[in-house]
Length: 130
Image 1 (tube, rainbow, N blue to C red):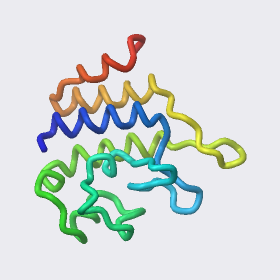
Image 2: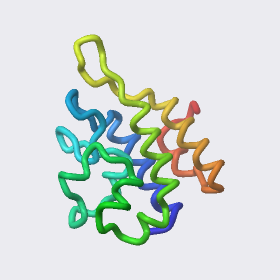
Image 3: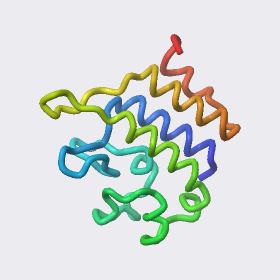
Image 4: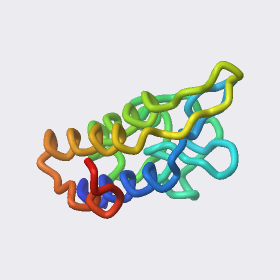
């Protein structure tokens, strides 16, 4: 998978999901409650995923698990996308997960696209105000 395809798939996934893949015990998760997935979990093949990956960053996954070359080759992009997801995880005073602010999410995704010389055209389909 190429960088642009990764960016497009993760951006669409995060916008459509609208909420972090997260639980109160472990924090952000590759595969979370109710079928949620973080940025990296969204593109990770089921055949590669292991429960032992949870709570580890992409760098640790690359060191400790057998991953496809396209994940290894895109470690920095995936790390940035993972940070966007993780930094957007917010809870209310009772610990309930709050939805993403889509405009902020799109802004962060656009910044990654610009920094990495990727197209952000995919984002136009999801908001006209940003």
